[in-house]
Length: 246
Ligand SMILES: [Zn+2]
Image (cartoon, rainbow, N blue to C red; front, side, top):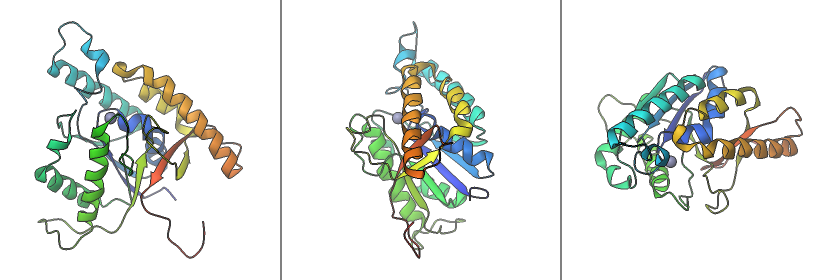
């Protein structure tokens, strides 16, 4: 049941949440979930190569373009709650300090999410150490948010939430194993339109449309539901817990 669910998505760079979870986000919003997105950095140094080819490009001009692109993509996906922390990237890990940690724990407690989606739990993204750092950072902050002993004024300890990892770009090289497949067929066109906003990373649009098609194949094979055409996959930090095997 998606309606009423609260989801927090934490994206290391401006476009990560769109490539890897844009369909799932749009689907959750369409079906009545509350979705909050935190974009930690604009990816000015590491994920804006094409923008730097423009004559006279500066860090400020690249950042402004990335901001406009990701705002436009968020609008297409129906995201109303999005914030930009504007941390440095490549590397990001020095900026994930105590102040950032306090801010993230507070954010998690404000949203009180049923679900957090961020970079893959294994922390083995073979080409992107920022993604690994954010994976660890969000995991640790979620544990802190759930701990009564972590006292932050005007915040309430959260309950254990489900925590999922994005499929990284180099899936096999990063030893990513999909634990969850989500059908995004009904919002697939929205995802494609959102991806088109990112002019600095045009080469990724075709890649992620192919990836959605591949995951659609897995969805049909495993579920038996032939209406599934396109999908996204996620890793799961925690096992499913309940009365029976599901
Ligand atoms: Zn990234």
